[in-house]
Length: 228
Image (cartoon, rainbow, N blue to C red; front, top):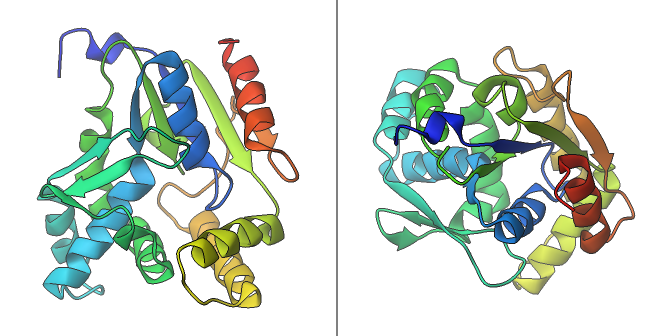
């Protein structure tokens, strides 16, 4: 960590799965020329690595060791897609976006030992000239002193529809009703976990993206951040 990194400005973008955090974080970081952190990807990579190693998901300490040993990095992409995620130099961007991995990641994220193992790793992404951090507890736990906190949300039906279109584009077969059920179950788990539950920070600006285009969401986020 550089001497000035703890003074670098931070914009946090929290919210549930499918609210548009990844896309907006990528666009905002690119617009500002700042670093980005996809914290959700860290939990997904932890889940993927644990599955690859056949680690018992009922063993929090074993999962925390997996989290502590991760060699992960992010690479910006030239389009509106979330940053590429590299694990041990291997591109796992698509692997970690499966529904199975996402469900496992939600389970892993509820474990205090895993969250503790990843906390400082997330804070180390704070570097000059600034950081845009995407997650579920960026503004409440990881960067509570952030300069600007935004909470993106959307209806479960809309978020499921977005995910449905993504999966169809990837050639995957899935039922929309199943996605809605999975999203609602994940929301319930994330909002009611004892450690770092999903909720807006007290000083966060809530932006409901239901029915909004990416361009309109970005414009509103830039306005909230005072970066127009």
